[in-house]
Figure (cartoon, rainbow, N blue to C red):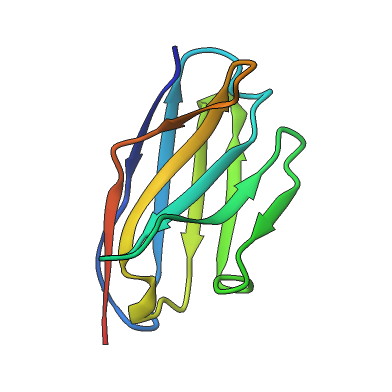
Length: 117
């Protein structure tokens, strides 16, 4: 059974950078698409970036050109490099993958990112 653990969140000023890390346990990591989601206070969770098993990437319009998702299959890890952060990027950031025929969502516990103006 896969488990995900995020780290790297924190408090940063607008214009600053952070790198989030998600470590996955269990098998089939290299065969799996992985995503970063975020949930701002009082709002719904939204996907910000996805990376496929072939390392094709996709980004939400709101983060294109500022965020970069990458993966290291040897370490069962994905990253989210976040540059030029804005106050509206403040959210809890979650790592996600899907498992099984039902494509069940697997979530990490999340890491808080706070961007001050």
